[in-house]
Length: 514
Image 1 (cartoon, rainbow, N blue to C red):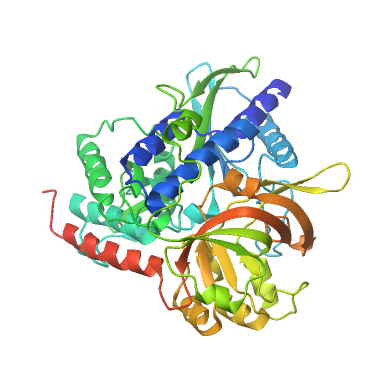
Image 2 (cartoon, rainbow, N blue to C red):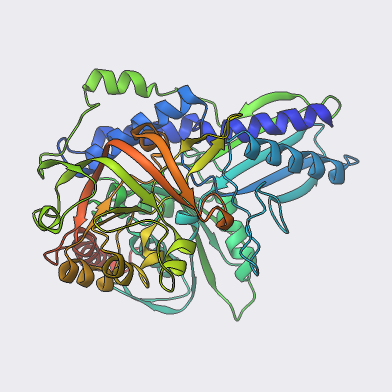
C-alpha cells in the first residue's frame, strides 16, 4: 500500500500539472483554426503558454483543482478499504505540496478542511472486474465548468430551439442548448460528456463517465457517432469562442453515452468541462502497487514552447482593441476612457475577493482602503515557506457571475474601480459600472501559471479564516493582462456574444435526424 500511495500521489500531481496528449492536440487544432489578431487568438496563445509553464514548473494548470474524482477497476479480492485510505493520504500530501488547492468545504459551517478531505471528498468509485491489474482514472473538474452542467427532462421547450421531443432530434437540441448556455463561464472552448437516459443521478454519472473517453475515440454506436460528429461541427458555428470572446472554436470534444430509463422519465444530462481538461489514468500492478502504464498518452504530443516560438506570439495583442497600461489605484477618469475590446496591462496592487469576501463586505467594513482599487475574482493556490512567507503557485480567475448579487453595491460602497474575473457579469453589475464609473476585465480562465508569473509578491492577507481560496490576498502585479469586456458606457461583450449566439442557435430548430 505504501507503493500504491506513491503511485496515486504521482497520478494526482501529473493530472493537476500536465494535460494529456489528446487534449493538447485538440487545443493545438483550435489554435490553428483561429483568425490571427482576434481576442480568441490571444486567449488561445495565453492558454498555450500556460500549458507550457505548468509543464516546466510542475504546478497546477488551473488554480481551481476541482473535486478529485477517481474511477477504479480492481481484481476480485483487492482490499478497497486500504486503497481508499492510501488515496486519501496521497490527496492530503498533494494539497500540502501545493499541487492541489484546498477545496473541501463543510456545506453547513463553510469551514475549509484545508487538506481536500471531507465527507464524500474525494469521490472514489470502485468496480470489480476479472482482469489481473488495477485501472485507476482521475479527473480534476473545477467549479466553473461544474456549475455549467445541465440536465433536461424531455419533452421540453428550449430557448431558440423550440420543442425538444423524446427522440434523437430532441437530444440533439438539448446538447446544442447546453453548449449555448455555458457561454464563456465554463472556460470555453470546452469538452462535453452527455448521458442519455437513467434517473437524474445516474444520468449525470453517465455524462461524467463520458469525459473519461479519449478525445480521439470513435463511438461504437453508429447513431451516437453521427450525433457526436454533428455536434462537433455545428456547436462551433455558434460563435461563442474561447472565453466567450467570439471566435471559431467553442467546443473541443463531445462524447455521448446511453442507458435504459423508465417510461415516465427521459433525461438528457450534460457534463461540461473547461479547456483545462485534467484527466489521466494509470495501470497498477496489484502485487507491487507500481505504475505499469499511463493512459491517454498515445499519439503525437504537442510542444507548445515550439509552437509559441515559431509563431512569435508571446506578446500577441488583438488588433480589435487598443493596448493600455494601467497603474493601480485607478481614477474614475481613467476608467471612463476604457472601452470594450481594449487590452489592459496592469501594474500595482490588486486584492482577491470571492464568494465569502463579497458576502462579508455587504455588511462590514473592508480591512483596507479599496477606493480606486481592483478586485480580482481569484482563489489562488498558495504555499508558505519555512520563513512564513506566502508564495503564489497558481492564480487564474474564477467565474464572476456568482458575485452578481453583490458586485455593483460593493463597488459603489467602497469606491472600487475595476473587477477582474472570467465569463462576465449581468445587468445589475453593468448598470453599476455605468453609474459609478467602473469596468469589468476578463482574464483568461484556467491560465493559472501565466497569471501567477505576473504576481511579483504577496503584500498581505485578510480573512484567512475563510480558507485559502476565499481569503483576501493583497497582490503586487506587473504586466497583468486582461480584456475590457464590460465598460462604463453600458457596453458588454458578453451580452453581445450571447445575443448573437442565440440567433445562430435558432438555425438548428428544424429536425435533422429521422
